Length: 393
Ligand SMILES: [Zn+2]
Image (cartoon, rainbow, N blue to C red; front, side, top):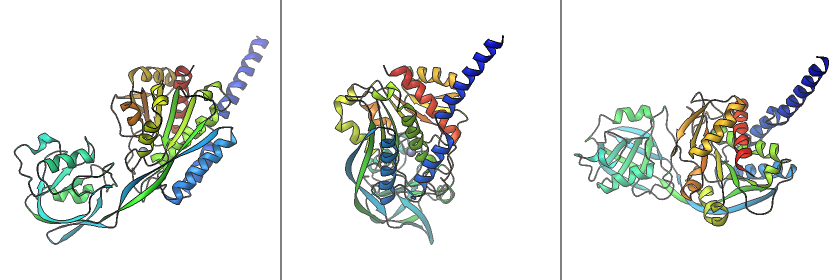
């Protein structure tokens, strides 16, 4: 009885020590503070550079070999765009990649999100179309609008406030987003003359992915998170949360044989159209072909879904479920194609992917994105570790 009890206590002691070592709040909090102190980590800016340097320094401390993968792309900057309807000036955000231009044309309100079928029986030729956000990418909406002869596009946000969206490349026609509040008023104004003034300028972005590895040879799995954020948003949940969780996971695994078979990658330029992950996949075809899994953590610091959401490969989801059961985390299956983040280029290259997220919070891409919950991040990190333990050999 005594001996059993003593053994139990020793076991408990070991468990507590192990638990305290991994996903330590104080350390993760220090990481979050360091990343957020720089301001928005927009790709190609000094803040983005400082974030990459911070990650590299932290990873070297625990013995990783760190490499930067530099790349460049062009992006547009909005110098203040406007929509004038009647006498009223309505503030709008140009979609990144939108051509500049000043259009005078009637509004045509599209009943839907701007799919091809939403234009049946509607004459949008020569018009500025008004569509709702959601369902399909902005670029797809713009292509449909251009196909039916529209000259410009206004996307009404589907949550409160406005966002900064991107075409993920060059858009076919000028496109802007408007806040849900301002947009509501537009929905009843088909036929009204409007002036859409899109004032974008093009700039070349020098960005870089941060890659950490310990082993030689190609990895069996990649764990990734984008570390860039959008103009005007501190990017705590999107995506300092994933950035810090993957950093802490790398620290946690630094002394495990698993880290010999895994690469940890922090992607840059995600917000401008998945540039970092696309460049990584394009630059490493052999490596990508051999991957058993790519895990992507994006927005893991605010509980929106009530469960840890997970999208992607069904078999990996099964492994995540086993891991989550042990960690007492509830999962929500988001299905095969959920989410437009850095796992997508890997999935398109045939890699089994898993996308981790607690959901899209109300402060998404807004100045209020200042908070990420360390306990939620730790839960996502532990489930990810469990998946790696089951995938990597
Ligand atoms: Zn994100």
